Image (cartoon, rainbow, N blue to C red; front, side, top):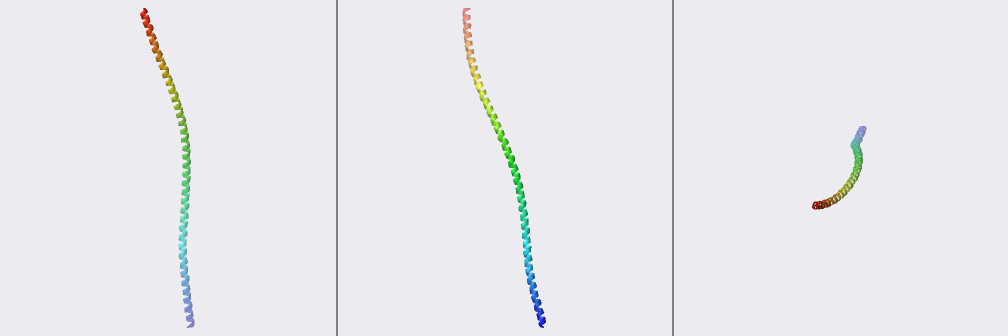
Length: 134
C-alpha cells in the first residue's frame, strides 16, 4: 500500500510536471507564432519600403531628366530671345534710318516744289514780257 501510494504520488507529480511543461510549451509556441507573424510583417514592411524607395529613385531620376530637358529648352528659348531681340533692334535701326531718309526726301521734295513754283513764276514773267514786246 505504501508502494502504491508512492507510485500514485509519483504519477501525480509527473502529471503535474508534464502539465506544467505542456503549459510552458504552449506559452512559448504562442509566443513563437506571434514573433513569426511580427517577423513576416516586418519583412513585408521592409520589402514594401524597399519598393517605395526604388519607385522614389526612379521618379527622382525621371524628374532629374525632365529638369535637364527643361534647362536645355530654357537655354534654347533664351538664345532665340537674344536672336529676336537683336533682329528687333536691327529692324528698329533700319526703320529709323528709313524714317530719316523719308524726312530727307520730303524736305528735298518741298525744296523742289518751291523751286518749281519759282520757275513757274519766272516763266510767267518771261512769257508776259515776250507777249508785251511782241
